[in-house]
Image (tube, rainbow, N blue to C red; front, side):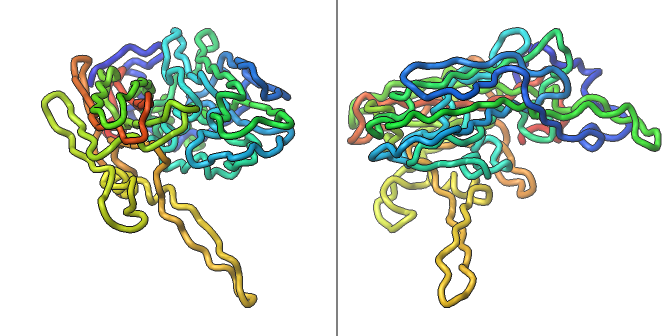
Length: 407
């Protein structure tokens, strides 16, 4: 696996090995409100508003949560298309997590791109759109939590955030009303007022030993494995024309790739790839993946195919939605579970092994010279559309615990 230097990374001697109690069992999860980056009582208007700052030093950083809350609600926006707009995640744009040396860890991109990477790259944490605090509706009352999380799981990808002289940084921007509404309504009659509060998620620094005097491992084993998240945007050719999307995001091990296709009008998501999607790595074919099945009924309807079936098989156990039907005759309402269905315009290509079930594939290793392409024909409705490629990548900065590879 290609190695890139990461500021603040531990040496091999600090890798968390040796005897004693394992770090993850000697520590505890820790959370605190970040000192900077709070956006208070801010009205959503026609101008962008930037915020951010240094992440609190101390502990081993798992990620930063941007907690979005509406202080006052707006009136409804007419014709709000909830299935193809990116609300409420696109309220935030230009979000990133910056290393102590100024290099990017989670690169600058929109809130919806970070949301998708969190959902499909760390599915065991659930879909943030169904978290307890999320409001996803046409009322446009912003409430959600956007996680900027480099950690994969079990400390893999966490950051040594223990030096007050070298601190990580987050940045985010509140987008303009015209951008985050995506042309889906006529605008607010009353602008909502929101608050955004960053919270640090971390592994706590453990005590030197337990109550019996047994030494605790002081450093997470996952520090030697670092994460990078990037994206690349392509302009699609005219309807019925061939598109070749050549990735510039190679050089590390890829554990997740997402293609998100959008129409030119208002940047709304749309299924703009037709049958099949050809995926190739150098001279090796990775598959010819169907997007449409000619006949059948839901969910095998137009717009779905093997690409969607692969996604469903991989993610269905995490993303089922519980619904309760109407009670009749005084009986308790029965509960049903709606199977996972992908978002319009979103195509996920996971390359990691799920915990427990051991289902999936190992990381896709690439070099800087690797040629990776996705090829597909533009759909009939495509006109100057775009395709966004989002990657979740990993690379070592020292000896890596074998139990943390391919997860």
